[in-house]
Length: 132
Image (cartoon, rainbow, N blue to C red):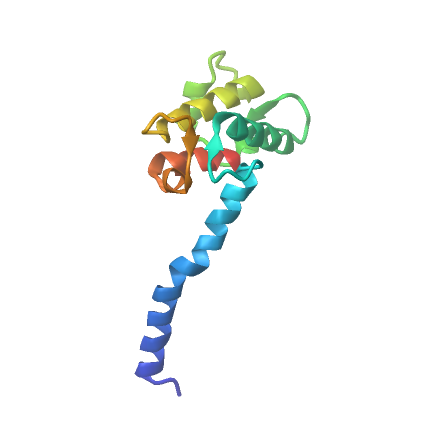
Protein backbone atom coordinates (compact mmCIF):
# COMPACT_ATOMS: atom_id res chain seq x y z
CA UNK A 1 0.00 0.00 0.00
CA UNK A 2 1.27 3.45 -0.87
CA UNK A 3 1.65 5.69 2.14
CA UNK A 4 0.59 9.31 2.31
CA UNK A 5 4.23 10.20 2.76
CA UNK A 6 5.15 8.51 -0.54
CA UNK A 7 2.37 10.33 -2.35
CA UNK A 8 3.41 13.65 -0.83
CA UNK A 9 7.05 13.02 -1.76
CA UNK A 10 6.06 12.16 -5.32
CA UNK A 11 4.03 15.37 -5.59
CA UNK A 12 6.89 17.46 -4.26
CA UNK A 13 9.29 15.88 -6.74
CA UNK A 14 6.86 16.49 -9.59
CA UNK A 15 6.49 20.15 -8.64
CA UNK A 16 10.22 20.64 -8.22
CA UNK A 17 11.21 18.82 -11.40
CA UNK A 18 8.27 20.10 -13.47
CA UNK A 19 10.00 23.29 -14.66
CA UNK A 20 13.25 21.44 -15.21
CA UNK A 21 11.51 18.86 -17.35
CA UNK A 22 9.57 21.52 -19.26
CA UNK A 23 12.68 23.60 -20.01
CA UNK A 24 14.04 21.29 -22.70
CA UNK A 25 10.72 21.44 -24.57
CA UNK A 26 10.88 25.24 -24.57
CA UNK A 27 14.47 25.22 -25.68
CA UNK A 28 13.55 22.79 -28.47
CA UNK A 29 10.94 25.25 -29.71
CA UNK A 30 13.49 28.05 -29.65
CA UNK A 31 16.05 25.84 -31.43
CA UNK A 32 13.48 24.90 -34.05
CA UNK A 33 12.72 28.56 -34.77
CA UNK A 34 16.30 29.82 -34.41
CA UNK A 35 18.46 28.33 -37.18
CA UNK A 36 21.31 30.80 -36.58
CA UNK A 37 21.42 29.75 -32.88
CA UNK A 38 21.65 33.30 -31.55
CA UNK A 39 19.09 32.57 -28.79
CA UNK A 40 16.40 34.74 -30.36
CA UNK A 41 13.81 34.56 -33.12
CA UNK A 42 13.59 37.42 -35.58
CA UNK A 43 10.69 38.14 -37.91
CA UNK A 44 12.37 36.48 -40.91
CA UNK A 45 12.89 33.26 -38.90
CA UNK A 46 9.27 33.34 -37.69
CA UNK A 47 7.98 33.88 -41.22
CA UNK A 48 10.17 31.06 -42.56
CA UNK A 49 8.77 28.69 -39.91
CA UNK A 50 5.24 29.88 -40.70
CA UNK A 51 5.69 29.37 -44.45
CA UNK A 52 7.05 25.85 -43.87
CA UNK A 53 4.09 25.04 -41.62
CA UNK A 54 1.65 26.55 -44.13
CA UNK A 55 2.93 24.14 -46.77
CA UNK A 56 2.49 21.17 -44.42
CA UNK A 57 -1.03 22.28 -43.41
CA UNK A 58 -2.15 22.60 -47.04
CA UNK A 59 -2.54 18.93 -48.07
CA UNK A 60 -4.66 19.75 -51.11
CA UNK A 61 -2.01 22.24 -52.30
CA UNK A 62 -4.58 24.85 -53.27
CA UNK A 63 -2.50 27.65 -51.75
CA UNK A 64 -5.01 28.42 -49.00
CA UNK A 65 -5.85 27.25 -45.50
CA UNK A 66 -9.42 26.95 -44.32
CA UNK A 67 -10.59 26.65 -40.71
CA UNK A 68 -10.22 22.86 -40.79
CA UNK A 69 -6.66 23.02 -42.13
CA UNK A 70 -5.73 25.67 -39.57
CA UNK A 71 -6.62 23.15 -36.84
CA UNK A 72 -7.53 25.67 -34.15
CA UNK A 73 -4.53 27.95 -34.64
CA UNK A 74 -6.96 30.84 -35.16
CA UNK A 75 -10.44 31.30 -33.73
CA UNK A 76 -13.30 31.91 -36.14
CA UNK A 77 -13.20 35.60 -35.21
CA UNK A 78 -9.42 35.80 -35.80
CA UNK A 79 -9.79 34.00 -39.14
CA UNK A 80 -12.49 36.45 -40.24
CA UNK A 81 -10.31 39.42 -39.24
CA UNK A 82 -7.30 38.00 -41.11
CA UNK A 83 -9.32 37.23 -44.25
CA UNK A 84 -9.63 40.52 -46.19
CA UNK A 85 -11.40 38.96 -49.17
CA UNK A 86 -13.87 37.13 -46.86
CA UNK A 87 -13.56 33.83 -48.71
CA UNK A 88 -13.13 31.80 -45.50
CA UNK A 89 -9.52 30.91 -46.27
CA UNK A 90 -6.07 32.41 -45.78
CA UNK A 91 -3.45 32.62 -48.47
CA UNK A 92 0.20 32.42 -47.51
CA UNK A 93 0.48 36.23 -47.59
CA UNK A 94 -2.57 36.59 -45.34
CA UNK A 95 -1.19 33.97 -42.93
CA UNK A 96 2.20 35.71 -42.82
CA UNK A 97 0.46 39.01 -42.10
CA UNK A 98 -1.09 37.42 -38.99
CA UNK A 99 2.33 36.05 -38.01
CA UNK A 100 3.86 39.51 -38.36
CA UNK A 101 1.10 41.09 -36.29
CA UNK A 102 1.54 38.53 -33.51
CA UNK A 103 5.33 38.84 -33.68
CA UNK A 104 5.05 42.60 -33.18
CA UNK A 105 2.66 42.09 -30.25
CA UNK A 106 5.11 39.65 -28.64
CA UNK A 107 8.04 42.10 -28.98
CA UNK A 108 7.35 44.73 -26.29
CA UNK A 109 10.89 46.10 -26.32
CA UNK A 110 10.66 46.55 -30.11
CA UNK A 111 14.17 45.19 -30.70
CA UNK A 112 13.02 43.03 -33.60
CA UNK A 113 13.78 39.75 -31.87
CA UNK A 114 12.01 37.46 -29.42
CA UNK A 115 13.91 35.73 -26.67
CA UNK A 116 12.71 32.79 -24.57
CA UNK A 117 11.02 35.10 -22.06
CA UNK A 118 9.09 36.92 -24.77
CA UNK A 119 8.06 33.61 -26.35
CA UNK A 120 6.63 32.54 -22.98
CA UNK A 121 4.48 35.68 -22.77
CA UNK A 122 0.84 35.68 -23.79
CA UNK A 123 1.74 37.31 -27.11
CA UNK A 124 4.59 34.87 -27.65
CA UNK A 125 2.31 31.90 -27.03
CA UNK A 126 -0.21 33.31 -29.53
CA UNK A 127 2.59 33.53 -32.09
CA UNK A 128 3.81 30.00 -31.34
CA UNK A 129 0.31 28.61 -32.07
CA UNK A 130 0.88 29.80 -35.65
CA UNK A 131 4.36 28.31 -35.92
CA UNK A 132 3.97 24.82 -34.40
